Length: 326
Image 1: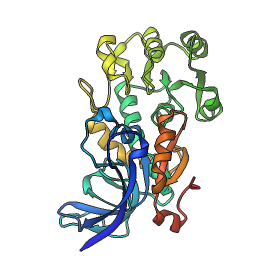
Image 2 (image 1 turned 120 degrees about the vertical axis):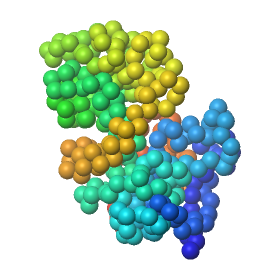
Image 3 (image 1 turned 90 degrees about the vertical axis):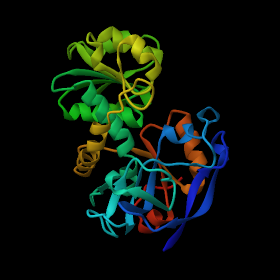
């Protein structure tokens, strides 16, 4: 059987203006594969970087690495999922679509208490944040510095560190300070003089013993290495090219970086369970129709979205399981 649905692709390399919605045929899933009817797809920086001129990609470029939806069909050998199951999947290819085929190993069941829009913004950022918290050995009573705490990864790192019993100093623009304080962090404004402000914020907490960089600026890196004595407990998810020279950890996908495959794979079940019981909050700051993917990418690129942006399909709008669509 062949299914038909829409998908967002980059028809050429460039900026968000090259995105277009196309109709595509999707065949029955093959052995070990699952066909998912997408309700929501997370927007991540990798998506708009994947069709930038510097990417060297060959158009058309399929977009979208994380989705939440409902199982439509399963291939032979699939044991744990059946049509009608609500699921979350990451990493996927071509998730900006009505339908996407994924290997069963990247799926996890979506708890009923977790909305599709929140679930679609959970795994990519959450797995990166969990990798950083594990790599920097965050433990109870540690004082941890998190840079870029208003973004998807940084906000997750703050929450995961707090859940481990750590004290968190979080850098972000003042707009997000009240939000971060509610999550249990001590917020600090980024910008010139950051080192002194972090020292003052941590004065009553103790020595800063670990740092997670989710923004990649020179001030974030310099502040981290100035404060943390053991540089093995400083990790960057962004400035991978500077990590070796500073003696800190590079996490993710790039030359010399630790991909953390085992930790990130195990994160699927952990993160969905935490989000389902309310221990982990996924802040969705914008939901857009597939046709408005370019608008979502422009907002993501400007760096001021905070939280997560998602694309929502007609299926989610029909069910009412979505945030307001812009």
